Image (cartoon, rainbow, N blue to C red):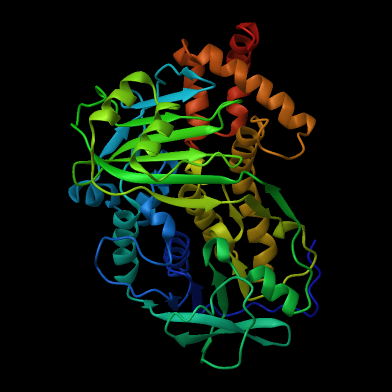
Length: 456
């Protein structure tokens, strides 16, 4: 239980400031706009209407999948979003017939799942959502401004200091400075992504910092656009191949807008994909199914491979703190950053926005405590899926608690059964698309089939 240092009266929800205009920040702003008179989004990049990767979102040059549950939430927040994205050329992938998944080295049976994944590039999705947020009458987006620190009064965060330009003062760990414009706020949301500043600010304000869970995946992923025929893979629009023990490599190939495909290759535990043309294709050959590799050999490259390194998945356990300054909330990747190979980030941020909305409907009193607990319930199943998947690879260091070992043994057996049985493939697909909780794969009917099936 949090122990406030002084009585915390209800605060009028007049002005909220969101730090960062990535997907997490935009989702937070959309939610806050329903509860605050005004919302200001501060972003150090220059923002315009172009659909292109930007400096502050290097992951925008890589493949993103908006999973079905995330798509549902975004369409509730932004009605007609799917139609707007498809009108801009974004394909949809129907899981029953257009998504091929290879797990534990086995192609899974097609699930009986009437759901779609939106295959918009990150720049297209973000620019479309940003335009929707900017069109809200009580939201202002202040671009080309960097946060330089917080404003506090009697232990409460009451605003942020911002400076024009993107001089780098928003880097993780940078100390607050006295210069810059003071922007008063009743709530400041740290949506600065993996470089979130909340942990450093807590230390500066004399609070304990949150304990962290980490999985040191040491993953790098390399992506490029390709030109291939629409039917290059038969009817498949997405092919996902997961890493396996002894081959800590993975790939996702997916259709994108502009009649393009994007290939993302990933390697964990330091087994990173090269960026040379021949080396990149050779790496793909070790992962891709034969028909996919044949299609890749005939594909026309539209861009050079670009690579990004991700050292560790990090979950910051703010819900375990006993004190926290009112007026401040970390959000999305500032709370938990996942191994990007699982494509969870945007969907989890969308679900966190629902948790934030529920918290705000109950007012601002004890908001951090209530939000952190609700966000932890959102993050926990996603973290379990990702951590278990990574720790199934002996190449990834870290402790394997009994819970993880038992879960991974069960999942390996499930994959063997789901290779041929769509009634087992379906609940697993529901879990990894966030349409069902992890307990779904342990339902009695499914568990009996898994436990009676072949051992790995």
